[in-house]
Length: 309
Image 1 (cartoon, rainbow, N blue to C red):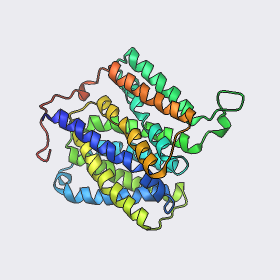
Image 2 (image 1 turned 90 degrees about the vertical axis):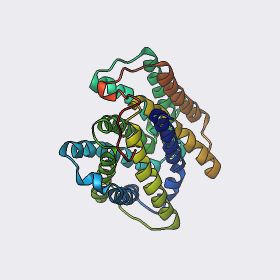
Image 3 (image 1 turned 45 degrees about the horizontal axis):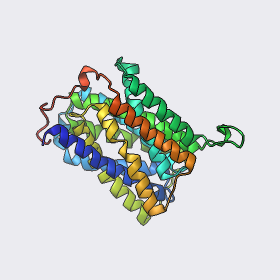
């Protein structure tokens, strides 16, 4: 099995993990404020990775440090907006809106790295944003939309999509230049510090170690953060950012299935149509469109990797 195929399969695995944790996090938010919950899971993940990759961190260079901090800052923004928004909206809706980051990735590559965008990708992006409109803006009695009734949780989750899109782009570039172990530790460590420092200023912090909260911290901290983001940092050495984004479109599907099984949650007709348009837009964008990646995104199948790969 080539490293490219292995990378794609592992990305599907971590997408399954992330999708399955939306319901768990939603329940844990009854006993913890969003940023504190994220800070605890990130601190746990950082401690695990720092111990496991202490030799790689010992030879850390300044450029690697800067890249890791940049990636971690966008990771902080993504999770902060996502978890705060999840406290105000449903797990499946949060997952679908988070998944819109996949169509933002090529847009960012075009805007900041002057890549060429295919007409099918333009069509896919337009379709996905129409879906976002249907999911986030309720219909009025006599008009297409009732903007006064927009859920704040939906808006925050859309903001999180931008954070995660930038994290995907910058992680793909950093993993091409520096050991993936260093980037994995740095991005999570940076997010942990930013969450711990900002929590007292951005929310009313509270944390009650209930069984649900403890289970959430352990599962999301170890599997959903330490393991998952290490795998992503390794895998993006061999998969372009747009391929990674396509795989992550499975996250809302896994999240909705989990929410349906455990919470019996069903999407309304308008929200369901919007969700289908988001998925349809992403599939059109990725399967029919093509973005010429920057040189740093080129990923030869036999590229050298770390001995731990």
